[in-house]
Length: 250
Image (cartoon, rainbow, N blue to C red):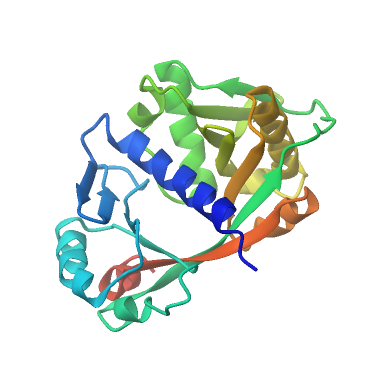
């Protein structure tokens, strides 16, 4: 049985993060139940999302917005039991990626190995380094100025091993919920246990920040790590793009 409150907390944290980073550059927009954020010269967040289930009457507005903002991705929350995603699939959208919304009750800290160092991004120089590491891990750019706005509940961290930057993560807090985002390690430093160590640090830090529940959206590559750390599955997210864009992006 789906835990509707936990699912709502997960989605609210995720979409709240997109809105928070979009507002400073006036990239966040809202039209009725449709919200979207498109930041120029950045691969993130660039999403269009809904507060309600998709209706067939929404399609013309969705298509207009996406065509006027190339690169927007539409996350479809698999929570309504209505199969309304077929409205997207019948109108030139197709699935680019899938993720699993997951959560963890925060009740104990992990022991760390002390083989990594973690630095909160505050300066422009830190932001420059972070924005160079991130695309190496994920394959798309996050603009460096996004990282150093005057956020209250968003935190960006650079991870290093032997003084060499090797990874990133982002935290976004909504009340007692902590969203863990952008946990990545550059390809040449994978399979060394670093991603799991980063996750343990983020969980410990979330507890220090008085969060009670951690939320994330897992790719297939990262899901096994999160399960080992105690995260449970909540719901499926299918990320849709226009078919022409999907082909253009490989």
